[in-house]
Image 1 (cartoon, rainbow, N blue to C red):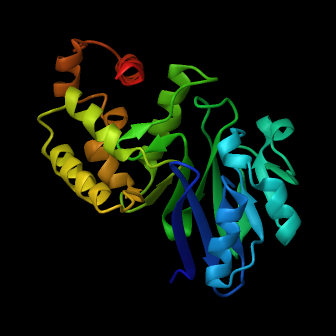
Image 2 (tube, rainbow, N blue to C red):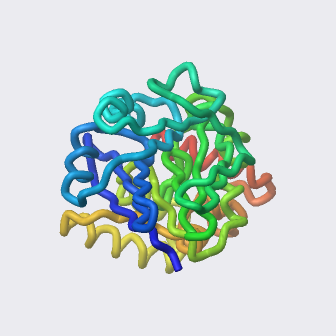
Length: 256
């Protein structure tokens, strides 16, 4: 039975702050550090002491709070080896295939080049939790800034191997915009239609749309559905490879 309590909140503009707390050991982990004050406030409300920051990539809106939180709590900052020079306060590096032991449980590291070259994701396999940051969003994926489309395609699709019930925590609240775009290339997808209505209702109530699940994304996320006959027909790419379809979807979203 899991002893983990996962608390998610919005900070900055549309970033997700995520705290993971183990009640047995007192271990408390922040997934990235978008805003030190927001994270500290949420820790205080719950009476938790921050012990670790798991950094996914070097973008400012994911590392801005590192040094302030390290000063406040003396927490250990862990992040990708490939981006260690760009991550303030980093104390330990990881790469794909590594398995951390945190709160007496395994945390597997996935390499996710694409959004940035060194981006990583963290998978709490015993608890069915994936912290994907800016690689996989609900109904979307991150922009390809540093890597290639082929890398991003591989990074996103490696998550297919995870159990369908795996909860996916993302870096940003982008789901409503992603839903509007996804419907333009797979309008006949009834699961997507349902999800779009659900998302619109949640946002109208000021509620968050994440976490999602791997199972939900396999049914609705166009970047995981490159083999869909409807998507391929809409794009005019019936005979293209999945990687080519993925690249075209991402390019269209860039212009949407």
